[in-house]
Image (cartoon, rainbow, N blue to C red; front, side):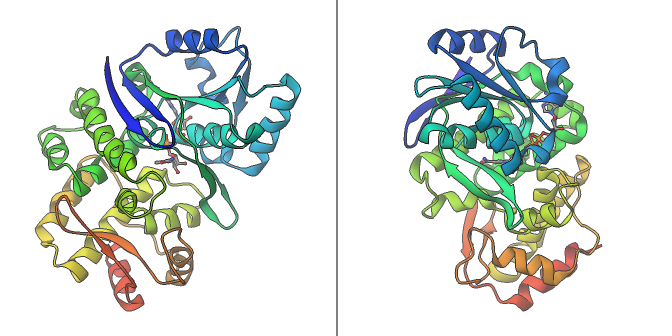
Length: 344
Ligand SMILES: NC(=O)c1ccc[n+]([C@@H]2O[C@H](COP(=O)([O-])OP(=O)(O)OC[C@H]3O[C@@H](n4cnc5c(N)ncnc54)[C@H](O)[C@@H]3O)[C@@H](O)[C@H]2O)c1
């Protein structure tokens, strides 16, 4: 088992290659009471007999205030107290939700993340960002609230569809672009998704090391942590406008290509780098363009993004691989021009 340490408002370990059922037993022994939060769609994959479980709707449908309210009521019924704990088992939507519930119940109770998708293992469960979606936008309501531990059982990946595995790879590729070129080399040397799957442990470890380092330096996103949002400004906008029909990673894949086009315009990025990344997305059947969703709606959502200041467009770009650049007050004409290149 490999452990990666994260320093934030509390310190904790991300353990890779655990047995989730044994870890859950251990957590249950350490607390008088625990509530497991997991998606109903995962019931067949999880033997949770004997545990108090709240089953959620699938995917983004669970990241709503309505679900949070139902769980709060459930926590009231079972009288979950300050010394008790919440365990989120599922993809990134579930760990975001479970963490947010833990942050808000009794002003904060202990929580553990057991991620079951690649996206949740490499990204969502690590770093302490928790939250839900609202009418105003994606992830606009939430809390920085770290888990007590992240416990990764690689066997969950065996049942993950190629579509969901690839969606997780979009975040892995993003990490390669902003900080660790060896990730891109490893993906380029693998023929297809099946070949990449045999490198899961290494890719997860490399990606988490980057995230742990960034988050440990800048937990509440003063500046450095913003690099992790590469590809997410446009990504979040089209994810919302597609009514969450796109996986988060698929939207990030399109957003990443957009951020590379912007980088060509604004920081002299060599188009050969964009072509290199584009080839990877194509290899893993990730989308790199999207039917027109209406530039004005996209622009409005991007201006309301968490990173925007006074409605000025801000993005993370790169001048070359592993060299992030903060793109401040990006002119709308340039943002629109790059959008033309990803519009189907
Ligand atoms: N907090 C953060 O820092 C952060 C970072 C990245 C992404 N996110 C969030 O994570 C979410 C995306 O994560 P995701 O792609 O894991 O989404 P998800 O949780 O919606 O899971 C995707 C699908 O995979 C299924 N699934 C989960 N585990 C499975 C398994 N082992 N086998 C088969 N099917 C399985 C789920 O039921 C769901 O249908 C988004 O809401 C995004 O905003 C958060």
